[in-house]
Structures are given as structure tokens and as C-alpha cells.
Length: 210
Ligand code: BG6
Ligand code: MG
Picture 1 (spheres, protein in one colour):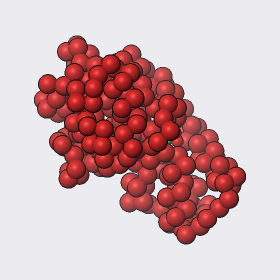
Picture 2 (cartoon, helix red, strand yellow):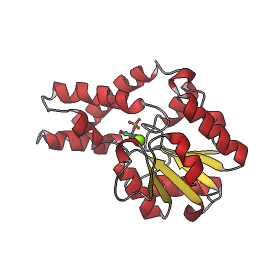
Picture 3 (tube, protein in one colour):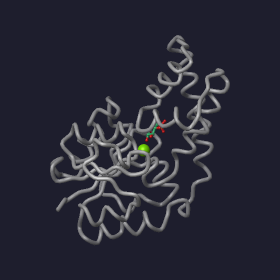
Picture 4 (cartoon, protein in one colour):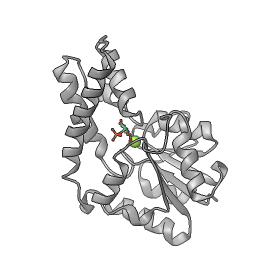
């Protein structure tokens, strides 16, 4: 029985992964780099700059750092514009009920996201109240598959990795959870990823396996 659950945010609790896709696609289109759903899946859980490096790599393009910074900033402006459409009703009842059930059971909860926009998303969707801690892109130096974001999340909860499960839609996130010694649960794109300790097709299923 786990004492804590750490949730990835984008693509697990909320479909912001589609907004990341739209924002990156507009940048890729400008650069004439073919970019579809398959390529977008490579960016799940990966930091903003590392995502840009992957996209530029797909187009065999290399750019000076200042241009890369400008592109990453432009992508983020578009993404943050899209985020403004989020409201509490952007979160499914199933996600809310699952988080509430964990709170009621006394299981500690944290967000473990590579995003620097995580706190903004939690605020816009009124999800903050369900979490004991938030570990995100603002408190890490290494992005998934490095375990840092989850290790910090466990530390913020006052728990050891062995006491926590991690729920992730990114293969890079499952690798990060495994590297940190967490029980890894794949959902969405990571459901069925052979490195996951468990796979679920719907978030409420985690209540039966932790
Ligand atoms: C992760 C997403 O949660 O956050 C990635 O899965 C994204 O796609 C990363 O690149 C960084 O997000 P942000 O909001 O800091 O650009
Ligand atoms: Mg994700």
C-alpha cells in the first residue's frame, strides 16, 4: 500500500498535451519541419528547450542559442494563450473524484511535472486544493527521464520513493520514475509501455492498484 501518489500533469490530469502540440506545430510549420502526432509523442515529459532540440533535429536544422531562445519563447507565448481557455470544467469528474478519494484515504498527493506553467494550470483549473506538494519545471535542473522532479516531489511530501507511485503518460516519465525507485503507472501514451510497473486505461483504476 503506497502512502503517496505523484501525478504528471500534462496528459494525465488534463489534456494540455494537445495545446503543447498546437503551439509546437505552429513553430515547426514556420520552419518547414514535418511534425505530426507521432513526432509530438517524442516531446511528452521533455523540457521546453529539449523539445525544441528534438524538433530542430527532425528537420536537421541547427540554430544559434539566441534564435533557439526566441523560438522557445514564441512557442510558450502561444501555449500560454491557449491555456487561458482552461477552466475548472476542463478537468474530468473522474480526475477530481480520484484525487478526492486519495485525499479522503489520507494518501499524500503531489504533482511532478517538467512544466514551468504547472502552477498556472493548477490555478486556472482549481486543482491546487487536492495537492500536498508541487514539483515542477521551476525547481529542477534535469528534465525527465532524469528522476529529479519526482525525487523532489517525494521529498516535498516527506516520503521515500519506495512509498510512492508515479502516474505518467510519457515513456520518459516512466523511465524517470523507475530510475528514482518509484512504482511506475503508465496511462495514455505510456499505457502498455513495457517498462511500466503497471498500466491503467483510466485514472480511477489507480485506486485499485496502489
Ligand atoms: C511537460 C510536457 O509536462 O512539460 C512537455 O509533457 C513540455 O511536452 C514540458 O515540453 C515543459 O512545459 P513548459 O510549460 O514549461 O513549456
Ligand atoms: Mg505528460
